Length: 451
Image (tube, rainbow, N blue to C red):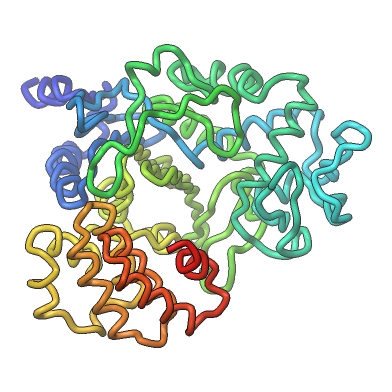
């Protein structure tokens, strides 16, 4: 009872199915998550754990907003970012099952006469199946015009633009705004009462603020007025777990591999709205969300009906996702490696933390150019600039340019830092150097023209 009360008082809960879970694992989770959050400068997050097809634990950690100190609880609502896509795909499959949409019919046939999103005739080959599995070849849409990176169905490339197109198709078929259709077809039937594809009044007090890599508030929540199948869902781990459990009971069509992601990752494919990771005859579904200053992740082991849902309000929210998956699901997964997010113990992050604490001079005394790449050191310079540590930023970027004198980008970054530090003479010198190495550097050209 004392253990249960401790969880309840800290904003989480154990269900009556906790007897089926490893309580030692959950006890360890509480301590380790807080440790990793501190190491990663993560302001707040919320985790849900599903075992045997039931949500057995969910808890919030940290704060919704570092300026107010309001704690994350089990009721805190997060932006799902691209975790919206699998939910939207589930709604699309409802239309497929009812016969209102065919996955292999070109989507242009569902639109008004004369409707087009591309002058490229290949738009007439694009199907809902391709859009849902990121194999359409569409690139980002600008002013309702889209081009192609490759022929439809040829290969895989992550393409949120395809979900924008499919959102329009669904709205045309249903004659409803996407947020209303998703509420009627998915959210309400699954009991996802705290979730919405647009802003709800209660979110004024329940929505987590996003935070940058320093753990500082990056701005107020964006109030979605119109839904987007790609990215506008807002939810809680408890609500999202209801969706995952529904998927576990009905995987029809969703987990069938539609296309491989490439030869480098032979065990990773894409299904209908989901990333798939193959383990022999077992299939794991997964997806992530990235709003810049907020990050989310979901992995579900369909062979055992176990899953973990992570929502965070931090740019660094996936720094320890590998450890979280191992702690909750008991194995390592390829999906975090596929995405390549930085770790809390990566050399570049530890270097940045060292410089923030002790300054660039102390760091450079023992630094060797082979310990970090040009790109990593360049990123550290930009991070220091963001943090207002301009002298440290200039020192780091000077070293980077010295170690990589043939890199136009290294000189350009150094020039930018010098300009922000108020040293226009040095900025001019380094922009000129960058321009010599890369005559097409318009940013350098424009700065030199105006200063």
